[in-house]
Length: 73
Image 1 (spheres, one colour):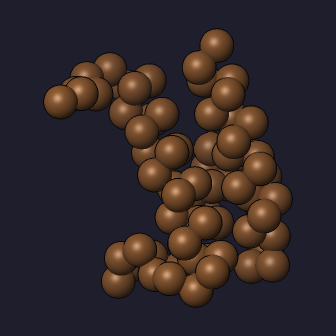
Image 2: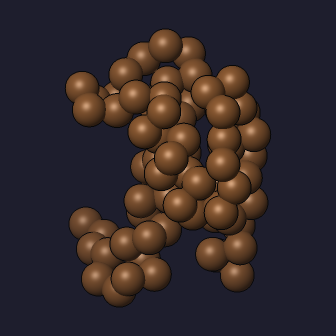
């Protein structure tokens, strides 16, 4: 089992989970009762610094993917 102990590792895990959740929301599946498109896009904007509209899920996913690649470097 992998354990995430440093703040950087925890942020990376949260980012990957958020990106996966956005992909589910895009096709109409709610990952959890508390997840909405609006909330998920707000969380994405916390990572990227860019605000997203409800119709910009694809943009948010691609921006999070870029952020994920930056974190791996």
